[in-house]
Length: 145
Image (tube, rainbow, N blue to C red; front, side, top):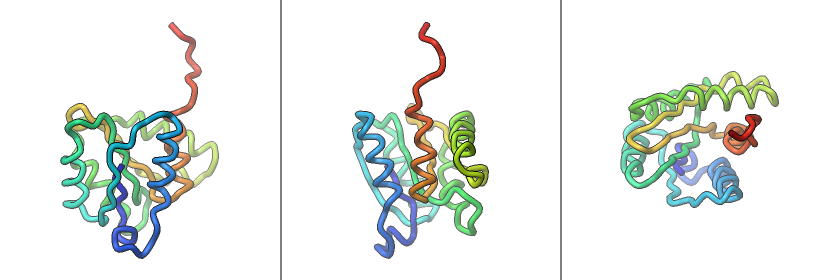
């Protein structure tokens, strides 16, 4: 779990989205191996992701994924670390969110892998993070094989 936020890293704002993500993951029996807050700076974000890739199956990041002036930093830093894109994941997150709020279409989150680790960006807003993570836990509509 990586929180990418200048104000949270400077202790000017309390992290809410990271806490929500952790709670949701724990509710589904996921172990949170690491929780780190970094400024919204490309080098810091990329260093933290690369350091966490070995030994972790998933890395969820939270931070600006919208259209704000600094929202491209978090997204771009994560995208630059990906070896393979997983666009279907972000399409599912936006589609699920679109059923709840028209603002979901503004999300520019990215997902993909580096080595054997799946990396997913989630919005920095509490509601956005919650709604974007929900599709991971939806019961499948496909019948069992």
